[in-house]
Image 1: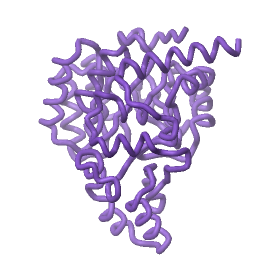
Image 2: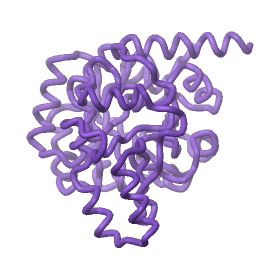
Image 3: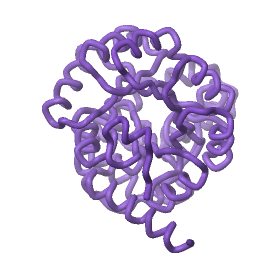
Image 4: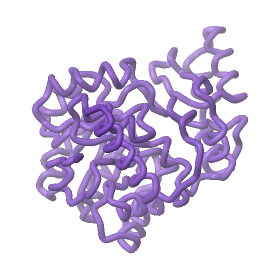
Length: 310
């Protein structure tokens, strides 16, 4: 039912991309998603180049299916990672925080599909002109760095604004979300928060428990005053951010408060002073499953939802 030419050409069974979550999306999660029929993603973020090389090679040993790498273009070593994915034969690159135009010719010469994350129609059009193969239209319901528009309003406008395939992201955590996204005209979805509680996700158990116990109103956006808003689950850290922002604290003070807080949550399990990035859909996530179970359940639910309303 969910036939996608774009994903079929990639060699992917289900039209779903696992989000490139910094400090979370490693070879274990990416390979499990790919083995389950989705497109797994390794997040480069600000990690050392050789660490990412090692993760790519680990993933190759764990799966013979396609997987990709997410590159944050504002990272200090973005250029090194841009060349690394070519050296290692990565099939797909997703990008954020910048314009991938300067690397497009390089990546295309190595047969890499380029899929930037966008938060506006204007940016989607710019990415299409730059040579992107598709775009991920991500609404502000998502976890981590966000834009202003919701998925429901952003996605159809991006679909109408470009001719390349569009993938929906933000607030998609079950089959109903998948079905709704396809009704908006996309060729696939990107999911992050749901995969945080996958068996193969290596984040700290405290982080997983925080997701599983989250309610619908438990996420909050911090950092709006810095120009880089981030959606996280409420905790002591988020309250300190909100207090500083109300006091008109400097950008430097806010950045200092947030320094190193994501790995503190992901690796150390500090759920009070760690940054627990998660989307608004966290309240819908109630069980740990394998990546295979998550993906198959979502698409079975999606088919049932569409059949029900035919």
